[in-house]
Image 1: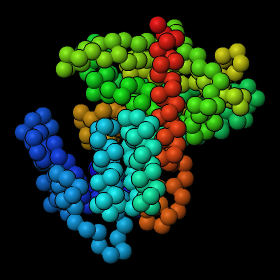
Image 2 (image 1 turned 30 degrees about the vertical axis):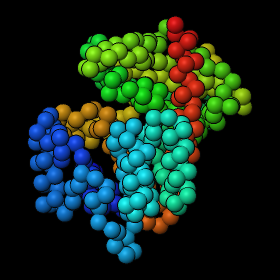
Image 3 (image 1 turned 30 degrees about the horizontal axis):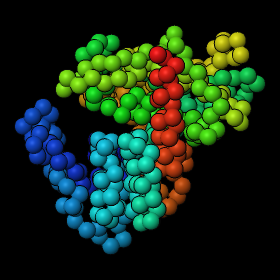
Length: 340
């Protein structure tokens, strides 16, 4: 929302925000007063309207195209997309992974297709320069093996990880590492049917069962590394660590395991912008700052597609999202078994 209010997304204008919790039962709880202040300022300065339901949206004006950006709880996304279509949205920007299960996401894809609605996904790493630069380098050498590394900044404690496991109940491969799986589907021919082998790095990887704030136990990976080989001869690795820090990167190694190339996110050119955003928005999760330019790119390409029909180059489609989720569901039991 802030990116659009700051006019950082040239082809999109924020008109409405749907927020049932902070405008309802959570108004006086944690974050409620801060949201109320944000809403008051956004309405006064930018004319943004706030609602508790998509059903409250006014009809679209003649000649105006409406785009929905859905960034709710994963379990709510199927309902929210149906309601967005009913509210006149012709394009949907759907945050990852899209839905809790493959079946639900497939049903969403079918509904959108029937209604003539385009659904594009918020897989921002598909347009990251560290990904494109690494792929370009790997293609320039004969034996280059790519590893995509995703890190986050949770504390390595049972309390911090237990809260993380509960809040992201779909699991690491359907949440944090889903971006990397989308890269594999988009650029490395990875599909469930085309996977020849999956090998976990047991020395690096860790799976824990921890209690969340509710007292319920959750089992998930706190860090995982694995290599996929495809039947068409490609090999690629993914590494994800919930407590690994705020720098993600991709690297290319040779057949001896020697590092030939590495590119980080953020890179040196981006660090100044990251530091500026940290000062401007204290308390926000660090990954918001490092991924800021990529999310602007994805949003603007989706907005242009909505207005003109121009292809949103590099942006993942819901078809890619369906296969990505299929791959995630396939990998979870395979990797769990290898780590027992």
